[in-house]
Image (tube, rainbow, N blue to C red; front, side, top):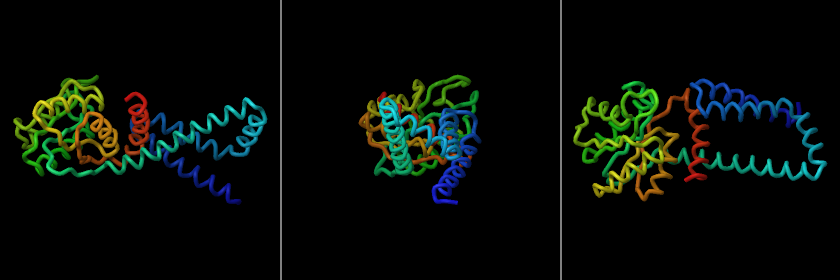
Length: 251
């Protein structure tokens, strides 16, 4: 077996593992993107020789050269961006801040009136943070979405008060529909109280994008993350790449 075939075998094996992993969760954008990405890599490894012959035929024509250079540039750009995103996402999982004045908990799905497992994990992390910094206020941020009988913010308020946090410390932001609005609406609330230093509580993969929006809104933040279940991590991680591209392109 030559070196090229060994490398392709390793890449295909790893991609098979990632393809299965990304499909262990319920279907999200991460499932679709991951399936296309890892499935494409596997197909490329399996059909490497026919692929090379096809590329040679296309490259033999001027129009083919231009198309291949363009496609190759786009693929290389996306690969570099996703690599940079992944490094940044890992860096921003935990970033302490001195003298925080507030804790911002970003919303997640509520099933009826009950926090989803992911939201409950965020809230448990928020409880740790609020108990560590007893002088902070807490902004619970999230509106009411499809399949939710109450707003995410109200579900979070109930959970926190049931677990010992004084209602007087909790500020509800229940109009936001996405991360961008979570941060900007929370910033407006904090501005009214003269607060400009906060800790953001959300899941590990989500913190970097939250930081982007915080910096755009002039908010100084630290990060304390709820862990994502290993079963779901690759799915959400891949989906977050797409969300970061959207954040950079649309702002």
